[in-house]
Each structure stands twice: as C-alpha cells, then as structure tokens.
Amino acid sequence: ETGVTQSPTHLIKTRGQQVTLRCSSQSGHNTVSWYQQALGQGPQFIFQYYREEENGRGNFPPRFSGLQFPNYSSELNVNALELDDSALYLCASSISSVGNTEAFFGQGTRLTVV
Amino acid sequence: AQKITQTQPGMFVQEKEAVTLDCTYDTSDQSYGLFWYKQPSSGEMIFLIYQGSYDEQNATEGRYSLNFQKARKSANLVISASQLGDSAMYFCAMRTESGGYNKLIFGAGTRLAVHP
Image (cartoon, rainbow over all chains, first blue to last red; front, side):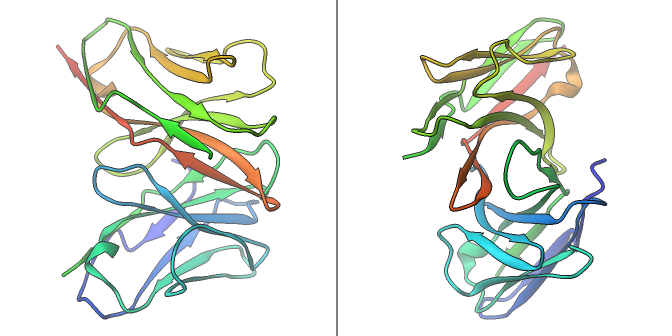
C-alpha cells in the first residue's frame, strides 16, 4: 500500500449535482495531483496542489476545482455534473512538485453520473 | 507535443514466459522520466519501474526491466517469468516538468492476460 487514501471508493450522482472527493496524502508529501481516468483510457491530469495552492492545471473546465489543507490532504470538487464526468478519479501524492520524484497513487474514487 | 503511445490494446502470454509491452514517447524536453504502472481491476496505480532520461543503463526491478532506447524514443517493459497475478492493465507514463511543476502523461494502456 502507498499510504495514499481516497474516499469514497464509489459514488453515484445525478447530472447537475455537485460532488466532493477526498484524498489523504502520504506522510511527508506536500504535493497532490488529481487525474481523471475515463473507461478504457489512460489517466488525464486535472490539476496539482502544492503547499495549499494550485500550481498547475490540465485541460479541464473551471467547474473542476480543488483545495489543499495544511496537513496536505486535498479535495476535488466538481460542480454541475455531466454524464461524461463518469470516471475513476485518482489522487497522487509526491514529496515535491518538481524534480525526480515518484508519485504514489491512491485506489481511486469511481464516480458514476446518471 | 508530448505524447505516450501504446500500440498494443491487449496481449496474451503463457504463464512462466516473458512478455514485452511496447511504449513510445514524444517530447522535446531534455530531462524527463518514464514510468510503468500496473492497474488491477481494483483501480490503484501500482508503480513498477522508472527510467530517467539521463540514465545510461536500463532499469530493472525484480522481474521487470525497461528496455530504454533513447534515439528511438521507446521504453518497452519486459516482464520475465509471467505469473497469473500479472494479469492487469499496464500503463506507460512520462513525467514532464513545465510551468514549474511535474505531471504525468499516460498512454492508453495495454491489457495483459496471463494464461496457465
């Protein structure tokens, strides 16, 4: 196990609703990245948080937002859910946002939008 | 454009045999890292092996080795002595650093089935 935990593991939401996914990073890691993995595809980078601030973002609309807390845990919020938001959401923590660092992944949250 | 290509949607291998999973990459960065992850049906991305762009020797981790050919921009994963538990999705990923932060770019993955 990596020490990165995500909750909940599964979630069903209705189109138009809002959802919050949570990630506890590995001890000593100050950087959390979020990825979206649609069915049958590789993960896509959503954004990264470093020391409580967003420091990088992929090609996702503003209704995808996040937070990082002083203990470096993180939340991913998605507003106005669409059917295409159905995916596995993966959180990865690392010891730094730059350099030769390995990312440790959680087990993911499987979101279904109906 | 930075991209990872995995051309094998699915692969089959007999237990105890070796298998090679292909990965090619495209980047203009001088410094980058290449990763292979295993993803079982549970969803977690399990780190297997890492190769840095300046590493001269191919990386090895137990039964996993990475055949790194920089000029051809390929980073194939070789699994020796396949086991039934190796059946899973395998993703090749490249770490890029732009705008002051690292991110991973993943390929589409290869589903490996190990037969007894």
